[in-house]
View 1 (cartoon, rainbow, N blue to C red):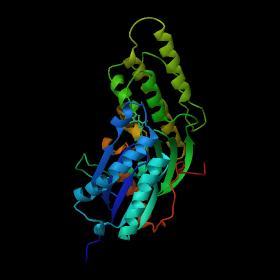
View 2 (cartoon, protein in one colour; view 1 turned 90 degrees about the horizontal axis):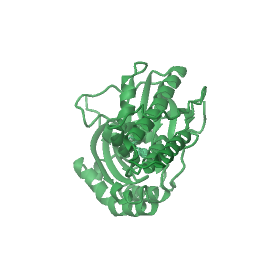
View 3 (cartoon, rainbow, N blue to C red; view 1 turned 30 degrees about the horizontal axis):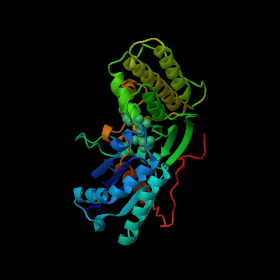
View 4 (tube, rainbow, N blue to C red; view 1 turned 180 degrees about the vertical axis):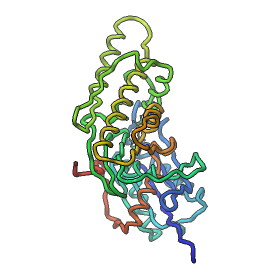
Length: 347
Ligand code: KG4
Ligand code: ZN
Protein backbone atom coordinates (compact mmCIF):
# COMPACT_ATOMS: atom_id res chain seq x y z
CA UNK A 1 0.00 0.00 0.00
CA UNK A 2 1.36 3.43 -0.96
CA UNK A 3 2.20 5.74 1.94
CA UNK A 4 -0.12 8.70 2.39
CA UNK A 5 1.33 11.87 0.85
CA UNK A 6 1.92 14.45 3.58
CA UNK A 7 0.11 17.77 3.37
CA UNK A 8 2.48 20.69 3.89
CA UNK A 9 1.26 24.20 4.59
CA UNK A 10 3.38 27.34 4.50
CA UNK A 11 2.07 29.74 7.16
CA UNK A 12 2.65 33.51 7.29
CA UNK A 13 1.96 35.81 10.25
CA UNK A 14 2.28 39.61 10.35
CA UNK A 15 -0.70 40.74 12.46
CA UNK A 16 1.29 42.73 15.01
CA UNK A 17 5.03 43.02 15.67
CA UNK A 18 6.36 39.58 14.74
CA UNK A 19 7.20 38.71 11.14
CA UNK A 20 6.86 34.95 10.98
CA UNK A 21 6.80 32.07 8.50
CA UNK A 22 6.61 28.33 9.13
CA UNK A 23 6.10 25.02 7.38
CA UNK A 24 3.87 22.46 9.09
CA UNK A 25 3.22 18.90 7.91
CA UNK A 26 -0.18 17.24 8.37
CA UNK A 27 -1.32 19.93 10.81
CA UNK A 28 1.04 18.85 13.59
CA UNK A 29 4.67 18.39 12.68
CA UNK A 30 6.65 21.63 12.60
CA UNK A 31 9.27 21.49 9.83
CA UNK A 32 10.34 25.09 10.41
CA UNK A 33 9.15 28.03 12.51
CA UNK A 34 10.94 31.33 11.89
CA UNK A 35 10.08 34.45 13.89
CA UNK A 36 11.69 37.87 13.41
CA UNK A 37 10.56 39.88 16.40
CA UNK A 38 10.37 43.67 16.39
CA UNK A 39 10.11 43.92 20.20
CA UNK A 40 13.38 45.87 20.57
CA UNK A 41 12.29 48.34 17.92
CA UNK A 42 9.05 49.16 19.76
CA UNK A 43 10.40 48.96 23.33
CA UNK A 44 11.46 52.61 23.41
CA UNK A 45 7.87 53.68 22.62
CA UNK A 46 6.44 51.45 25.38
CA UNK A 47 4.18 49.65 22.89
CA UNK A 48 3.77 48.76 19.22
CA UNK A 49 4.19 51.73 16.84
CA UNK A 50 1.88 50.59 13.98
CA UNK A 51 3.52 52.37 11.07
CA UNK A 52 6.97 51.20 12.06
CA UNK A 53 5.63 47.66 12.44
CA UNK A 54 4.33 47.49 8.86
CA UNK A 55 7.50 48.99 7.42
CA UNK A 56 9.60 46.47 9.33
CA UNK A 57 7.41 43.60 8.05
CA UNK A 58 8.12 44.79 4.49
CA UNK A 59 11.85 44.70 5.16
CA UNK A 60 11.93 41.21 6.67
CA UNK A 61 9.11 39.12 5.23
CA UNK A 62 10.92 37.85 2.15
CA UNK A 63 13.98 36.68 4.11
CA UNK A 64 11.79 35.10 6.80
CA UNK A 65 9.82 33.07 4.23
CA UNK A 66 13.01 32.00 2.43
CA UNK A 67 14.47 30.89 5.76
CA UNK A 68 11.34 28.93 6.67
CA UNK A 69 11.50 27.01 3.37
CA UNK A 70 15.25 26.45 3.70
CA UNK A 71 15.00 25.14 7.26
CA UNK A 72 12.24 22.75 6.16
CA UNK A 73 14.50 21.65 3.23
CA UNK A 74 11.64 22.33 0.86
CA UNK A 75 10.89 24.48 -2.17
CA UNK A 76 7.51 26.00 -2.98
CA UNK A 77 6.82 23.03 -5.31
CA UNK A 78 6.72 20.79 -2.23
CA UNK A 79 4.09 22.96 -0.50
CA UNK A 80 0.36 22.24 -0.82
CA UNK A 81 -1.09 25.59 0.25
CA UNK A 82 -0.25 28.97 1.77
CA UNK A 83 -2.07 30.14 4.90
CA UNK A 84 -1.81 33.78 5.97
CA UNK A 85 -3.21 35.73 8.91
CA UNK A 86 -6.06 37.84 7.52
CA UNK A 87 -7.12 39.39 10.85
CA UNK A 88 -7.64 40.56 13.51
CA UNK A 89 -4.60 42.79 13.92
CA UNK A 90 -3.00 46.06 12.83
CA UNK A 91 -4.31 46.90 9.33
CA UNK A 92 -0.98 48.03 7.92
CA UNK A 93 0.80 44.95 9.27
CA UNK A 94 -1.85 42.53 8.02
CA UNK A 95 -1.71 44.06 4.53
CA UNK A 96 2.00 43.26 4.23
CA UNK A 97 1.53 39.55 5.00
CA UNK A 98 -1.62 39.16 2.93
CA UNK A 99 -0.18 40.91 -0.13
CA UNK A 100 3.06 38.97 0.09
CA UNK A 101 1.08 35.71 0.35
CA UNK A 102 -1.07 36.67 -2.63
CA UNK A 103 2.06 37.32 -4.68
CA UNK A 104 3.48 33.93 -3.73
CA UNK A 105 0.19 32.19 -4.51
CA UNK A 106 -0.09 33.90 -7.87
CA UNK A 107 3.49 33.09 -8.86
CA UNK A 108 3.37 29.48 -7.67
CA UNK A 109 -0.24 28.60 -8.45
CA UNK A 110 -0.68 27.37 -4.86
CA UNK A 111 -4.03 27.73 -3.10
CA UNK A 112 -4.25 30.54 -0.53
CA UNK A 113 -6.20 30.60 2.73
CA UNK A 114 -6.88 33.65 4.91
CA UNK A 115 -6.76 32.62 8.57
CA UNK A 116 -8.24 34.14 11.72
CA UNK A 117 -5.38 34.88 14.14
CA UNK A 118 -7.47 33.86 17.18
CA UNK A 119 -8.31 30.52 15.58
CA UNK A 120 -4.61 30.09 14.86
CA UNK A 121 -3.78 30.62 18.56
CA UNK A 122 -6.28 27.89 19.46
CA UNK A 123 -4.73 25.54 16.88
CA UNK A 124 -1.29 25.93 18.44
CA UNK A 125 -2.53 23.21 20.83
CA UNK A 126 -2.55 20.71 17.93
CA UNK A 127 1.10 21.26 17.08
CA UNK A 128 3.61 18.67 18.26
CA UNK A 129 5.83 20.28 20.84
CA UNK A 130 9.27 21.20 19.49
CA UNK A 131 10.53 21.08 23.11
CA UNK A 132 9.52 17.48 23.91
CA UNK A 133 10.17 14.24 22.08
CA UNK A 134 6.98 12.51 23.15
CA UNK A 135 3.79 13.06 21.17
CA UNK A 136 1.09 14.49 23.42
CA UNK A 137 -2.52 13.34 23.00
CA UNK A 138 -4.62 15.60 20.78
CA UNK A 139 -7.23 17.81 22.45
CA UNK A 140 -10.64 16.09 22.67
CA UNK A 141 -14.02 17.67 21.89
CA UNK A 142 -16.10 19.18 23.34
CA UNK A 143 -13.46 21.46 24.78
CA UNK A 144 -13.51 24.87 26.32
CA UNK A 145 -10.89 27.25 24.94
CA UNK A 146 -9.66 30.18 27.01
CA UNK A 147 -8.07 32.59 24.58
CA UNK A 148 -5.89 35.17 26.31
CA UNK A 149 -3.87 37.47 24.08
CA UNK A 150 -2.87 41.12 23.86
CA UNK A 151 -6.13 42.14 22.20
CA UNK A 152 -8.60 39.41 23.17
CA UNK A 153 -9.83 37.46 26.16
CA UNK A 154 -12.67 35.03 25.53
CA UNK A 155 -14.12 31.63 26.37
CA UNK A 156 -15.13 29.58 23.33
CA UNK A 157 -16.73 26.15 23.30
CA UNK A 158 -15.40 23.93 20.50
CA UNK A 159 -17.62 21.00 19.65
CA UNK A 160 -15.55 19.96 16.65
CA UNK A 161 -12.74 21.24 14.44
CA UNK A 162 -13.37 24.81 13.23
CA UNK A 163 -16.63 24.99 15.22
CA UNK A 164 -16.93 27.59 17.99
CA UNK A 165 -19.56 29.08 20.25
CA UNK A 166 -18.62 31.99 22.44
CA UNK A 167 -19.56 31.80 26.11
CA UNK A 168 -17.99 35.03 27.21
CA UNK A 169 -15.42 37.70 26.45
CA UNK A 170 -13.84 40.68 28.13
CA UNK A 171 -16.06 43.70 28.52
CA UNK A 172 -13.11 46.08 28.58
CA UNK A 173 -9.37 45.34 28.60
CA UNK A 174 -7.97 42.04 27.36
CA UNK A 175 -5.84 40.17 29.91
CA UNK A 176 -2.63 40.87 27.93
CA UNK A 177 -3.59 44.53 27.61
CA UNK A 178 -4.02 44.67 31.42
CA UNK A 179 -0.54 43.15 31.87
CA UNK A 180 0.90 45.71 29.44
CA UNK A 181 -0.87 48.70 31.04
CA UNK A 182 0.01 47.70 34.61
CA UNK A 183 3.64 47.15 33.55
CA UNK A 184 3.69 50.74 32.31
CA UNK A 185 2.24 51.95 35.64
CA UNK A 186 5.02 50.11 37.44
CA UNK A 187 7.64 51.56 35.05
CA UNK A 188 8.50 48.09 33.73
CA UNK A 189 9.68 47.65 30.13
CA UNK A 190 7.58 46.56 27.12
CA UNK A 191 6.35 43.88 26.53
CA UNK A 192 4.56 44.07 29.86
CA UNK A 193 3.53 40.44 30.40
CA UNK A 194 7.04 38.97 30.68
CA UNK A 195 8.19 42.02 32.71
CA UNK A 196 5.39 41.60 35.24
CA UNK A 197 6.11 37.87 35.48
CA UNK A 198 9.80 38.56 36.14
CA UNK A 199 9.13 41.22 38.80
CA UNK A 200 6.40 39.05 40.39
CA UNK A 201 8.82 36.18 40.91
CA UNK A 202 10.49 38.24 43.68
CA UNK A 203 7.23 39.56 45.14
CA UNK A 204 4.54 38.52 47.60
CA UNK A 205 1.25 37.76 45.81
CA UNK A 206 -0.64 38.41 49.06
CA UNK A 207 0.90 41.83 49.70
CA UNK A 208 -2.08 43.70 48.23
CA UNK A 209 -5.62 42.42 47.90
CA UNK A 210 -6.73 43.64 44.47
CA UNK A 211 -10.35 43.18 43.31
CA UNK A 212 -11.45 40.16 41.27
CA UNK A 213 -14.34 41.03 38.94
CA UNK A 214 -16.29 37.78 39.12
CA UNK A 215 -19.41 39.04 37.25
CA UNK A 216 -21.46 36.30 38.96
CA UNK A 217 -23.53 34.15 36.63
CA UNK A 218 -21.82 35.64 33.59
CA UNK A 219 -18.96 34.24 31.51
CA UNK A 220 -17.58 37.65 30.64
CA UNK A 221 -14.38 39.10 32.09
CA UNK A 222 -13.48 42.63 33.15
CA UNK A 223 -9.94 43.80 33.93
CA UNK A 224 -10.23 47.60 33.89
CA UNK A 225 -11.29 47.78 37.57
CA UNK A 226 -8.24 45.78 38.56
CA UNK A 227 -5.98 48.07 36.53
CA UNK A 228 -7.55 51.13 38.19
CA UNK A 229 -7.06 49.57 41.64
CA UNK A 230 -3.35 49.10 40.90
CA UNK A 231 -3.14 52.71 39.65
CA UNK A 232 -4.78 54.04 42.86
CA UNK A 233 -2.45 51.97 45.03
CA UNK A 234 0.62 53.21 43.11
CA UNK A 235 -0.54 56.86 43.52
CA UNK A 236 -1.14 56.30 47.24
CA UNK A 237 2.27 54.70 47.79
CA UNK A 238 4.02 57.42 45.75
CA UNK A 239 2.76 60.07 48.19
CA UNK A 240 5.29 58.95 50.75
CA UNK A 241 9.01 58.90 49.91
CA UNK A 242 10.65 55.56 49.25
CA UNK A 243 10.92 52.93 46.61
CA UNK A 244 7.77 51.59 44.87
CA UNK A 245 7.32 47.93 45.90
CA UNK A 246 7.14 46.89 42.23
CA UNK A 247 7.64 43.17 42.93
CA UNK A 248 4.78 42.94 45.46
CA UNK A 249 2.47 45.02 43.26
CA UNK A 250 3.29 42.87 40.20
CA UNK A 251 2.81 39.61 42.11
CA UNK A 252 -0.49 40.75 43.65
CA UNK A 253 -1.80 41.95 40.28
CA UNK A 254 -0.71 38.76 38.50
CA UNK A 255 -2.35 36.55 41.09
CA UNK A 256 -5.64 38.47 40.77
CA UNK A 257 -5.65 37.96 36.97
CA UNK A 258 -4.76 34.26 37.25
CA UNK A 259 -7.38 33.70 39.93
CA UNK A 260 -10.21 35.11 37.79
CA UNK A 261 -9.09 33.40 34.57
CA UNK A 262 -8.70 29.96 36.13
CA UNK A 263 -11.82 29.94 38.32
CA UNK A 264 -14.10 31.25 35.58
CA UNK A 265 -12.74 28.85 32.97
CA UNK A 266 -13.30 25.84 35.23
CA UNK A 267 -16.86 26.92 36.07
CA UNK A 268 -17.65 27.49 32.40
CA UNK A 269 -16.16 24.11 31.42
CA UNK A 270 -18.36 22.44 34.06
CA UNK A 271 -21.42 24.30 32.84
CA UNK A 272 -21.01 23.28 29.21
CA UNK A 273 -19.81 19.76 30.09
CA UNK A 274 -16.53 20.14 28.27
CA UNK A 275 -14.13 17.19 28.37
CA UNK A 276 -11.02 19.32 28.37
CA UNK A 277 -9.74 22.85 28.68
CA UNK A 278 -7.44 24.51 26.16
CA UNK A 279 -5.53 27.70 27.02
CA UNK A 280 -3.91 29.73 24.22
CA UNK A 281 -2.66 33.20 23.28
CA UNK A 282 0.32 35.24 24.49
CA UNK A 283 -0.78 35.35 28.15
CA UNK A 284 -0.79 31.52 28.25
CA UNK A 285 3.02 31.90 28.41
CA UNK A 286 2.57 33.22 31.95
CA UNK A 287 4.16 30.83 34.44
CA UNK A 288 1.70 31.47 37.27
CA UNK A 289 -1.25 30.92 34.93
CA UNK A 290 0.24 27.69 33.56
CA UNK A 291 0.97 26.39 37.05
CA UNK A 292 -2.55 27.20 38.26
CA UNK A 293 -4.13 25.35 35.33
CA UNK A 294 -1.80 22.38 35.64
CA UNK A 295 -2.39 22.04 39.38
CA UNK A 296 -6.22 22.08 39.20
CA UNK A 297 -7.69 18.60 39.08
CA UNK A 298 -11.11 19.25 37.49
CA UNK A 299 -10.16 18.98 33.79
CA UNK A 300 -7.29 17.82 31.57
CA UNK A 301 -5.63 20.99 30.22
CA UNK A 302 -3.82 21.66 26.96
CA UNK A 303 -1.45 24.64 26.99
CA UNK A 304 0.95 25.06 24.06
CA UNK A 305 4.66 24.93 24.83
CA UNK A 306 6.13 28.35 25.61
CA UNK A 307 7.61 28.90 22.15
CA UNK A 308 4.15 28.53 20.57
CA UNK A 309 2.14 30.71 22.99
CA UNK A 310 3.06 34.07 21.52
CA UNK A 311 2.64 35.00 17.85
CA UNK A 312 4.13 32.54 15.35
CA UNK A 313 3.29 31.20 11.91
CA UNK A 314 3.25 27.47 12.77
CA UNK A 315 -0.14 27.99 14.41
CA UNK A 316 -1.39 29.76 11.26
CA UNK A 317 -0.21 26.84 9.12
CA UNK A 318 -1.89 24.40 11.51
CA UNK A 319 -5.27 26.18 11.37
CA UNK A 320 -4.76 26.46 7.59
CA UNK A 321 -4.32 22.68 7.38
CA UNK A 322 -7.73 22.02 8.94
CA UNK A 323 -9.40 24.47 6.54
CA UNK A 324 -7.46 22.99 3.61
CA UNK A 325 -8.48 19.37 4.29
CA UNK A 326 -12.02 20.66 4.75
CA UNK A 327 -11.90 21.79 1.12
CA UNK A 328 -11.73 25.53 1.65
CA UNK A 329 -9.90 27.63 -0.98
CA UNK A 330 -9.94 31.44 -1.09
CA UNK A 331 -9.86 33.61 -4.18
CA UNK A 332 -7.07 36.15 -4.41
CA UNK A 333 -9.31 39.20 -3.96
CA UNK A 334 -9.83 38.96 -0.18
CA UNK A 335 -9.05 41.96 2.01
CA UNK A 336 -7.58 42.09 5.52
CA UNK A 337 -10.05 42.01 8.45
CA UNK A 338 -8.50 44.08 11.28
CA UNK A 339 -11.52 43.53 13.58
CA UNK A 340 -12.39 39.96 12.61
CA UNK A 341 -14.12 38.11 15.44
CA UNK A 342 -13.80 34.37 15.74
CA UNK A 343 -17.42 33.85 16.77
CA UNK A 344 -20.44 35.94 15.86
CA UNK A 345 -23.12 33.99 17.67
CA UNK A 346 -23.13 33.65 21.43
CA UNK A 347 -24.58 30.85 23.55
O1 KG4 B 1 -0.86 36.43 21.39
P1 KG4 B 1 0.12 37.52 21.50
O2 KG4 B 1 1.57 37.22 21.26
O3 KG4 B 1 -0.28 38.69 20.53
C1 KG4 B 1 -1.62 39.02 20.31
O4 KG4 B 1 -2.29 38.32 19.53
O5 KG4 B 1 -2.07 39.97 21.00
O6 KG4 B 1 -0.07 38.14 22.95
C2 KG4 B 1 0.67 39.23 23.37
C3 KG4 B 1 0.28 39.52 24.80
C4 KG4 B 1 0.91 40.79 25.34
O7 KG4 B 1 -0.08 41.55 25.98
C5 KG4 B 1 1.96 40.28 26.30
O8 KG4 B 1 2.21 41.18 27.37
C6 KG4 B 1 1.31 39.00 26.80
O9 KG4 B 1 0.72 38.45 25.65
N1 KG4 B 1 2.29 38.08 27.35
C7 KG4 B 1 2.30 37.71 28.64
C8 KG4 B 1 3.44 36.88 28.82
N2 KG4 B 1 4.07 36.76 27.60
C9 KG4 B 1 3.34 37.50 26.72
N3 KG4 B 1 1.48 38.01 29.66
C10 KG4 B 1 1.76 37.51 30.86
N4 KG4 B 1 2.85 36.72 31.13
C11 KG4 B 1 3.70 36.38 30.13
N5 KG4 B 1 4.75 35.61 30.38
ZN1 ZN C 1 -1.55 36.65 18.95
